[in-house]
Length: 192
Image (cartoon, rainbow, N blue to C red; front, side, top):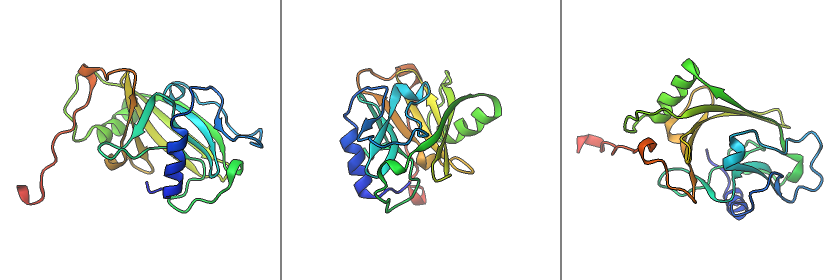
């Protein structure tokens, strides 16, 4: 998901702010219809931040949301554009944020895409579906897989894309070694 560089720098600025229940940043003038609290377990890893480009859901202090190997911050924008976000401030916000535990076919479908290319694990994580809706009426869906001391997320539109998976790491704790997925080396083009 491509996001304008200004927004990425903005997220980096909010990444170190507190473990507050309330949103961080300049939230003055946020409408009463805006969601300002995250559901569990998302509230363990994330927070809502008010930015010049609207509300975002990003990492909570002490946690890192990043694409593997890139150190690129991950966040969920209320503006929901691929590039060139507008400075809408608190006029762009979430009207709905739900986190639903998933099992059965829905879990298996999302988990199999997320877990492709990883070593097999004996213990399965707890799966959740995050649905967010913006004041614009646009919606996003992500799945999260909770391993305890860390989690993984994956963006899903009509289908989940394994290239969109991201890590959620607790900087104060080492990942549960027995549950940690390990990426297998990718084959080189031409078989070499």
